[in-house]
Amino acid sequence: MKFSRSDFPADFLFGAATAAYQIEGHKFGGAGSTHWDTFAAAPGNVVRGENGALACDHYHRWPEDLDLLKEAGFDAYRFSTSWARVLPEGRGTVNQQGLDYYDRLVDGMLERGLKPFQTLYHWEMPSALADLGGWANRDVASWFGDFTDIITARIGDRISAIGTINEPWCVAYLSHYLGHHAPGLRDIRATARAMHHVLLAHGEAMGRLRAAGMKNNGIVLNFTHAEPADDSAGSRAAADTFDAVFNRWFIEGVTGGTYPQAALDLFGPHMPAGWQDDMATISQPMDWLGVNYYTRALLTHSDAPGSGGVGTVEGDLPRTQMGWEIYPDGLYQTLTRMARDYVGDLPIHVTENGMARPDLVENGAVYDPERIDFASDHILATRRAIADGANVKGFFYWSLMDNYEWAFGYEKRFGLVHVDFDSLKRLPKASYTALKSALAR
Image (cartoon, rainbow, N blue to C red; front, side, top):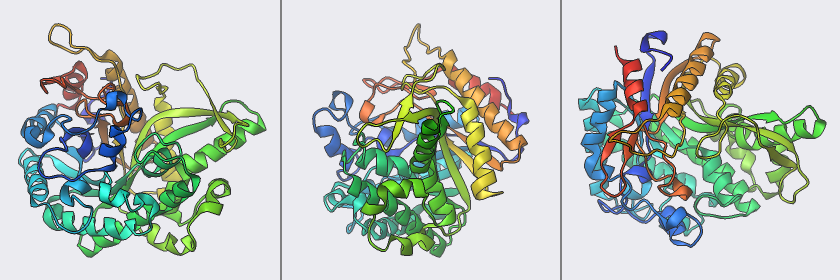
C-alpha cells in the first residue's frame, strides 16, 4: 500500500463492509423468505440459480470474522441487519432469534474494539411485503419505520452510526426498471414509485431514529462518475440525464427536497399523486452521508427505445472482474462534489469501495496485487479529497470477505479474505496483509 494510517487525521476510521443476506446464511435462525430467495429461484436471474441460504455462514462463524477485522487493525465494521430475519413476514410477529443474533454480533464488535456502523436495509425485502408491491407501495415507508423501531430498541444503544438504506438507485432503478435485481421488474411506473418511496422510507426511518434518541444517522448512496464521451451536445445531454437519474435524484432528494428536471422528464408522468408533499420528510437533516463508489461511465446519445437518450461508450482503462473501469479520480471528484454542492462540512464516509477479481488459491495463498493497487489508489484519492476540503471521516473497504454477489452468485470475489464456498474456510489474501501493514499503529 502507498499510504499509512499516519497520513490521515487521528479520528479517521478505517473499516470493512458486508451485508446480511450476502454473508449470514439466511436459512438459519428463523429468518423469513425474501424477494431475493424467490428471484433466485426463477431460471436465468442468478448465476447457477444460487441464493443466500448458506452464503458464508456468518450466522455461526461471526466470532472468527470479527477476529479478522480486529487483527487487520480496522476501527469499525459496517454491517447490515436483515428485515426478514427480524420480522419474517415483514410486519407482525418478531423473530426473537434474529434480535438475539444481532445482540450477540454487536456485543462481539464492541468486545473487539470495533465501532458498529449499522445499515438498516441492504436489499432483503421480506417476501410477504414484496407480495403487496414492496417498494412500489407507499405503505412501505411505514412498514420500514416499524422495523426501524424494533431493531433500534434492541441494539441502538450500542451503535456508533446508522445508515437507513443502502444504494437506493439499486433498490429502485436497477431492480424495477432494468430488472437485474429482485424483484426483477422492467416497469417504468413501478420504478418511479420505488425511486420516490425508497427515499420516503429513508425519511420515515430518520424520524423514528430521532424519536428514539439516535444522534448519528445518515443514508448510503451509490455514485458513478458521469462523463460525456466527447464534446458533442448529444454526449453532454446524455451525461446530464445519466447523472440526474443515477446520482442527483437521490442526493438532491435527501439534501434539497427536490428532484432534477432531467429525471422528472422521464419519470414525472409515472410518479405517485402528491409526491411533492413528501419532500420535507425526505429531506430532513442528516448527520452524515455515505458514499459508495466503484467506477465511471462514459456517456453518448442513443436513439434506442427506452434509453432516455443515453448510451454508454467503453473506455480504455483497466477493468475489474465486473467489467468496471478502474478510475480512482472519480472517487476524488465525487467526494469533493458532495462537499462543494450538497453537504458542505457534513461528515462523509466512503462506505463502499472495492474490486472483484478471479482469485485463486495457489500454494495455500491468494496473491492479488491488482486489489492492493486498487485499494491503495482509492484511499489516496480519499486523502486528496480531504486535503481539498471534503470532510471525509472514514473509509470502508468492500468487502471483508468473498460472498454472495447477488445476480452473479458466488462467481465474483470482492473480499480481502478468500472464502472456500464448499468448506467455508477463510483465508486472508495478500491485500488483507498489505492493508493490515498500512493500518498498523
